[in-house]
Amino acid sequence: MVRRLSITVPDELWDELIHLDPSPSSLVQRALRCLSDKEGPGAGPTPFEAAAADIPYWQDALDELARQATELRAEGYEAVIMGFHDGIVGLAWLDKIVQDYRPDELPQLLSRAADYFLHRRHVGGHSDGRAVPVEAVNNVLFGWGSTEPEWDEDHRELLEGLCRIITIQERGLLKENANGDHFRLARGDYPTTDIPYSLFEGMTSALFDTAAAVRRRVRSTSNPAELGSFLQ
Image (cartoon, rainbow, N blue to C red; front, top):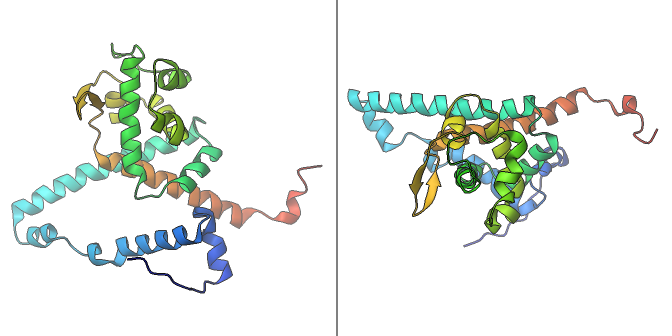
């Protein structure tokens, strides 16, 4: 079932958010998903959380898993910021990612892209564990052998940016499991990095947080009267 609605939205609110999705329908759906995540049926305590409050060893298990997930999320967040700091990815890539992908779909795509990078490393002659340097990313991904159309066409820029971020990591799971000597086959003959989902959720948060911070900084500090003309 699909509801067709006619709604009125103040211009200032709409103008603040329309850059997130050029489709009015998609933007409204995205806003409703965010509201559902925060205040919908799934926003309250889960049955496990409710039970853990009365069972100490359940609570211990929950606390430990949450600790691990929090550390992984922070690791993914830091990896993205490092990419921007080192100039490995920039504003154009950031804008494209936050406009083309939803926060709820991006972690899974990043995880699959990391697996694909691992696969291409081994196809491209790095099966001995040698790390791929950032300048060789495109050759590894697209230069040796056939590539999958999904990555070569639909998600090429996402894949390339993520893999450039991976190659500059000096420690952590992105370095060890995606750009190191880790290798395990899953889903038939396809390799997996074995990197938990929480790390890619951290990367996703960093991307959308950074985009929002940049927009807020520009709006608060720019004065059109002082900018002049780029034609001068």
